[in-house]
Amino acid sequence: MENELKGKTKQEKEKKRGITAVTVSGYKSICSEQRIEVRPLTILAGANSSGKSSIIQPLLLLKQTLEASYDPGPLLLNGPNVKFTSADQLLCKNTTNGIDANLCIGIEVDAEESLSIALRSRVHKGFEIMQTTYFEKGKEPIVLRPEMKSEEITSLFPEIVDSFSKRGVADAEWRIERERCFLVLVMKWPSKKQETIEQLLRPLFRIFPTISVFEPQLRKIIHLPGIRGNPERTYPTTAVGSSYQGTFQDYVASIILNWQTESDQRLDVLSHALDRLGLTWKVLAKPINDTQVELHIGRLLRGRRGGARDTVSIADVGFGVSQTLPVLVALIAAEPGQLVYLEQPEIHLHPRAQIGLAEVLAEAAGRGVRVVAETHSSILLLAIQTLVAEGRLDADLIGLNWFTRDEDGITKIAKASLDESGAFGDWPEDFGSVALTIESRYLDAVDARHGKL
Image (cartoon, rainbow, N blue to C red):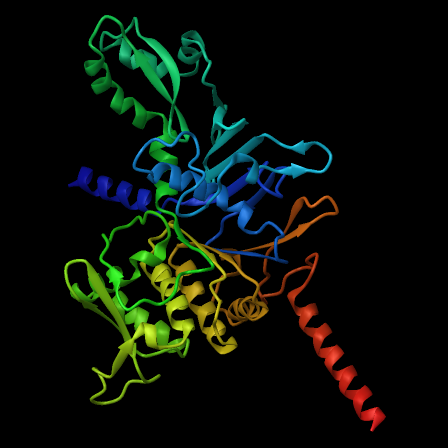
């Protein structure tokens, strides 16, 4: 029984693990290294084209590389999450040095382990991995490079080598090889069949943490782009699980149908969230056949007696519902530790609904979900500040990141935290000052017009 409880505790801990920081350099306008801490509610703000999406897109490149049905090389450039046709489209263009051909992506998990992947662009041949560096808190970093000799490798992993030596595999040759976007240990042993070696080798892949620690976190990322497609009459039936290949909006109808079939309480949470935003009081999934699902919502904003069947297709209501429903489902479906990346979650929403959305974001953060929201909404930010000031949201759960570009077009990130009253320090530019400026211009114009009459 004790071992069983320990096993459950370990599984629960693994389930709650999550990405806690991202580091990027050499990507688009992020030329020099920039780092953001991923808190349960991480806000990315700044002017258009300031580099907000560029801090997360490298993770999406890794995600779509891992999810491809074939080995696309170190990076799948043209995929469902990020689309490029050549490497120079994503590399930093420095006005002084021209195009920087190197890209570095860093991922930290639970503030204890991190992995840095350094890649180099080759002309018309995509990328190649130069090296990966693994850091574990309190230990020396481990650097892997493709050209490393067997002697170098064995000196880095004496415990692993010793373990295989005890199995009679002492004369093995160790190599570093690429597996998708990772570098992994590979053992070649000429005195036995390679099939037998690979059976021994599989557990080794799980010992070295590049795959066992970081791959699950990348695969679990939920990504909702700013353009989430037009509302449809029917949606394709998809699998429902804890990870979602590509972008998330394609799974929404099937998730709702699954909650409905299983009498899952999250369906009630979703209905309450839609009501809170003033969009509708009910959402209903109707299976048409084995491959298609219809989405219907309550025709009225509030439910009433006898109105359970008073629904309309989501294609026949305002655009805000179809654009916001995937956001709400993602936030409710996400597990503790899971990273949810939302591009402009407030798009097509009335200001009052944006205030309700802030509450849903706060609830997801309170459950331990790691929400990264890229936003242009001053109302959404102010609503989050208000929740902190009211004592309904812990200020420590929130990280603010303001993106700007200097005269050379290079992205810089200013970071801020909220205090207990929901206030933050000065940012390079303030949402509030923009609103005050246009209000002042309007009042001055009104005064001037009345002065001429």
